[in-house]
Image (cartoon, rainbow, N blue to C red; front, side):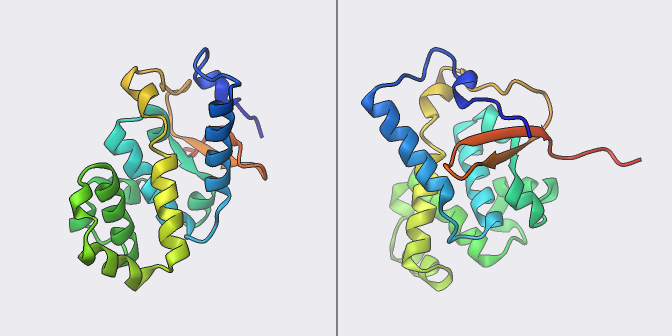
Length: 175
């Protein structure tokens, strides 16, 4: 497995200051959490990528989600999740994502009840941290410094410490 260092994607941006280490530690801690299923976590990650228009995040597919059956048909449903046939718990997670990023007033009693119907308090917290983690790159996106170093959709993995790794193409052409 080849790993592209995360700082290679944002040369000159990442530093070794206290804040940089704190953000990196937060990000690594978030991706190590496994209370929410990989498909829902991937849908939330990709919804963040859509909202923020992050080309790098949009070009990756999490290895654990791929192993659980994630495919591009599922990805295509994210932008229209309210009208999709995604599972009710996945739609609730995407509503939380939209409320946190786009319309905080949607984080109301109805959303809270919907989330509690499908997730434990710990899982709701994990989803919220996922949204925060996948929104931390917003400054890089705004400056268009987040471009992926490849043209196709690639596999995203995380090691035991929560550090990202980027493998080859997520999908191979079948003969």
